[in-house]
Amino acid sequence: MRKVSLERVRAGVRVARTIQSLDGIILLSAGAELTNEKIDQLKHYNITEIYIEDELSRGIPVTEIVKEEIITDVKAQIKTIMTTPSLRISVDGKKVMEMVENLLSNLLKSEFIIMNLSDIRSVDDYTFSHSVNVCIMSLITGIVMGIKGEALKELGVGALLHDIGKVMIDDEILQKPTNLTINEFDEVKKHTVYGYEILKNSKDVSSTAQIIALSHHERKDGSGYPYNLKNNDIPVPARIVAIADVYDALTTNRIYRKKMLPHEVVDYMCSLSNKHFDKIALDAFISHIANYPVGTAVVLNSGEKGLVAKYNKNFPNRPVIRVVIDENGKMLVKPKEIDLFRRPEYRIVDIWDI
Ligand SMILES: [Fe+2]
Image (cartoon, rainbow, N blue to C red; front, top):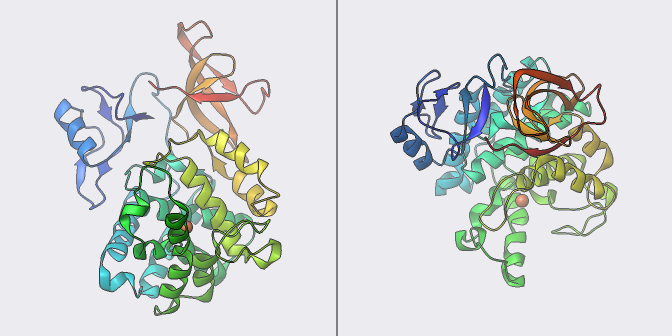
């Protein structure tokens, strides 16, 4: 199976995985055939990408790091918390902890703990998807760094609620499609302090989670906010969440900015590793993120086009590519495989929009 943009998909194609709305409604079951009516319905639900089964991708399995139903459920619960006035000013820490434990037990069952973002962004409901993505990425980074037990769970709770303070910021500012004024940006910055206060006044929320909400925009060189903390003054869990937060934000389309390609984001973040990010946390993150998940159609630097067919363990960004189009744009009668781990001269340079 492979992942395609809904804009590109045509009626008649079979859906490879069940598609659910954020409210848990099944919009299409795995194996169902797409019709123009169904495509319009999916667009109505803000679904931007789906998995299909076709000739090009036959036999390519797509692995899930966390079951789709669990992600949909956590997103829905976060949405309820962030949109219900009584819940969002005093969060039920035990309930959020249960969500994190559920995500975590699923993650630990995965054969490889590799972040495969296609699994965690099928519904484009930014704030809630972003919270869950940042939580999963932070948990994996924490695991790679050797964080365990309660500390790991508290990292997950803080990551899931890192932007809870945004409920206090005017939506008009948060959704503004043009550049913010200095005053507006100062207002947005306050979401860190608001988040800290909300979590401090909530039941059963650890100080780690409170500090993550407060410090996830601090930067190593002191250029962050709200307190311009530097280096080791920034708590480790906040450094981890900062990385997941920036990666997820830059790889997602926003009203005011088009998304960057994942490998470009990684290059950009590495260039800032001494200024903004903790090097140990960034290395742990990068070594476990699959920029181009299995099933993604990609373009190689040779001009050949194909699909990511499988990962190489420990090198998720040097996967095996099933090449189906040669460098002259001709469809190969028999697809060939190029293992990027064994062929360092090859690189993925773009996503192939088919
Ligand atoms: Fe934030």
